[in-house]
Image 1 (cartoon, rainbow, N blue to C red):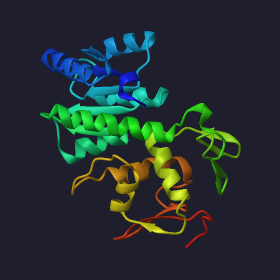
Image 2 (image 1 turned 135 degrees about the vertical axis):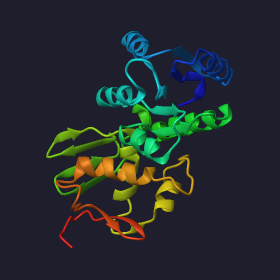
Image 3 (image 1 turned 90 degrees about the vertical axis):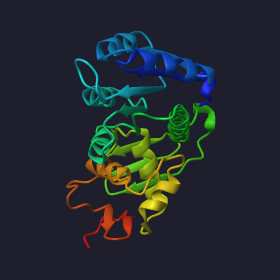
Image 4 (image 1 turned 135 degrees about the horizontal axis):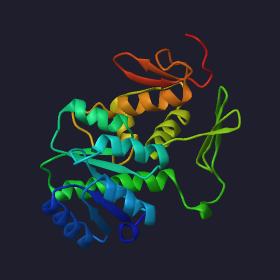
Length: 240
């Protein structure tokens, strides 16, 4: 998705930050709307659609984590969380509820811009245009079928809802069966993903994906942990 056509919704109670982000991101070619809280967000989304939501955690009324959960339950719109709480636990919780990225305040607007573009690129790769052709592949494991042309996962013929990040991760796994993939490798394959030495968000994404494809995510059959090395996708699902 080109930035010139991307519509961003900023949800933050800091009027100064709303004004700064609106000016900066508009200058970078985005169409930007900024609102102060969840009620205003709901009202705007009831009339319009967004290509990405930039969401503050510490909001008056309903907090950002609750809003992120609601957004993710009803939509696959990408979410970038902003928060003054930059601890690892807060970041992991934000990613667990379905956010695509997390940035601690204070931040450099250029870093936010880079993360927005990275998330939009991942969304574009996971959701190609309808005229992209039907040259995709079909992968089967257990009762699941992943159709990469339709970007669709089904279980016994019933659709399984995946976020763009979950789809991208699953596709990486199914295209590399029975191979141990380190966390660094997964980060590199998830193009544009921001990393740091303490980033555990790959583990969070794996946990979210397991919750949708494993009967018991505590004893996974398909997406297995290889301790000290990374993860391995076993399409046959046989017991070890």
